[in-house]
Image (cartoon, rainbow, N blue to C red; front, side):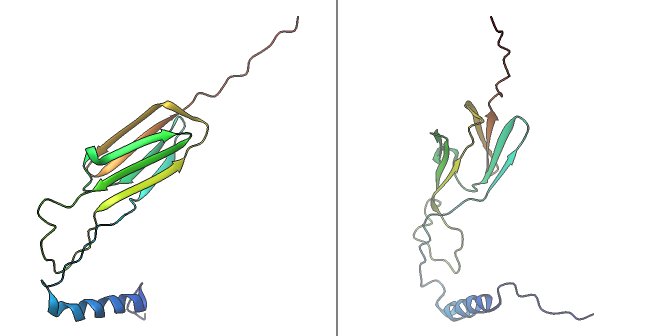
Length: 143
């Protein structure tokens, strides 16, 4: 059996490692501002009587999440703030971004806009959207 080194990012990974190595001598002297827009990962599943949307929003306070439904478009907005006092610190490496995010989803006509609920626990937002009852066929008598 032949074993080979697994390098999924190939040259990009090597470039990243080289840049990190070159900057290693300047640790503590450079400041990286990583406040920018970001996109939370979202899973959507359809069940018999509802749609369930699950979004990863770690570090986002419940008060910083805004969910709206307008003209069939569900919009999730929010912001992950930097921890108090971290803005002026010097980092050796900083990958956790903070800033605003927004995701929009066009919902089908089969949703019941009056029955939508949202909960957040452990950095996971769950939005449950009930399906509207299907109109039943009506028998019309002929006079």
